[in-house]
Image (tube, rainbow, N blue to C red; front, top):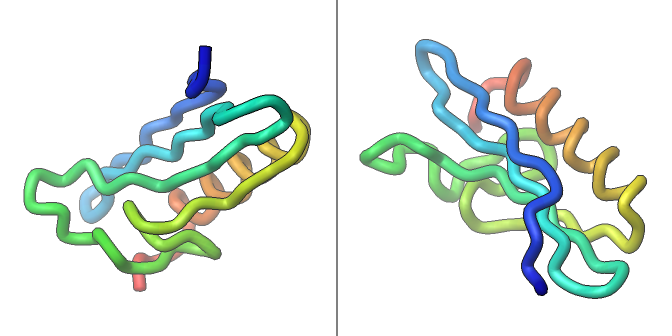
Length: 83
């Protein structure tokens, strides 16, 4: 039953190939993670917004909070420079 994918969104550009993923990991437990989809994992461990790519997640207790975390991560992935 868990984990269950809630939403996945790809972000690609000349310098980025990322996936923002939100999954339900338990009853009233959600996790949003940003993954580096480059073959060489060039952004792993770097920061985009409040996310550490491939290493950190943002936990949420409700689906609404999880969708807000997904939107924030997606906005950061689309507009911010990977640091």
